[in-house]
Amino acid sequence: MSSLQESKKNQIGLLTPNQLIRKAQEKGLAFSHFSLGEFLGMVEENAKPYRELMAFYKCASMEIETKFRVLDEQLSLEKEHNPIETIKTRMKSPESIARKMNRKKIPLNLRSLEENLFDVAGVRVICAFPEDIYFLEDCLLKQDDIRLVERKDYIENPKPSGYRSLHLIVEVPIFLKNEKRLMKVEVQLRTIAMDFWASLEHKLRYKKDIDTRLLGELSDELVQCSLESARLDMKMQEIRQRIEESNNRRA
Image 1 (tube, one colour):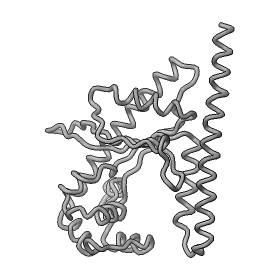
Image 2 (cartoon, rainbow, N blue to C red; image 1 turned 120 degrees about the horizontal axis):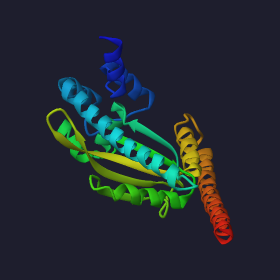
Image 3 (spheres, helix red, strand yellow; image 1 turned 90 degrees about the vertical axis):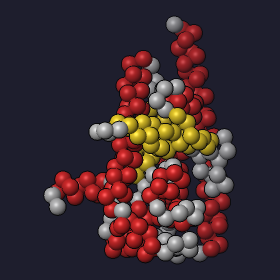
């Protein structure tokens, strides 16, 4: 296999059975609905269709990323304040796909995977202020080739852990050699503060061998950190609004 082929293989997230088993063991991946061997068997039996499906998801995430980069370029010319700080993309790993299919008791085949898992491909957009999130949501959903499938506002209704973010599942067309295909992508919109909290919480959550009592205490402290982070977001947004109002009065 050439280095280019190997790179493409790694980009779409297809691991060898041994690699997948090793990663699953490292993360303590438990199976009940189907066994790890059954999942690996499905991947091996459908190796080419699986790679193609992952490539389609990657293309869809590239389409959404491009839309935000075009917005970023336009807004940088039109506004003093550009709401987009960074844009990131990610593909769900095979072990994460397996874990979610198992948890949701999804039938073990590629068609079921595509019909029931909406977050295989993801795009994360980081903003400076909370109101930027809803502005960018509106810009994206106004585009006539985007269809909103699902919306979850964890800013208005944070998760019990304190997690905050706006999640959109959107359907976007990708244009292949001989066909147009509609693919689903998860879009996450967060402020810098929300992303900072989520990144640290994720790292802490996967730490091993934490005493149960200490884990409870840390969980409570993380919720408090989330509340303080949200207050800081709103305070910084208020300061920006006051500055803009002052500038408008002088204009």
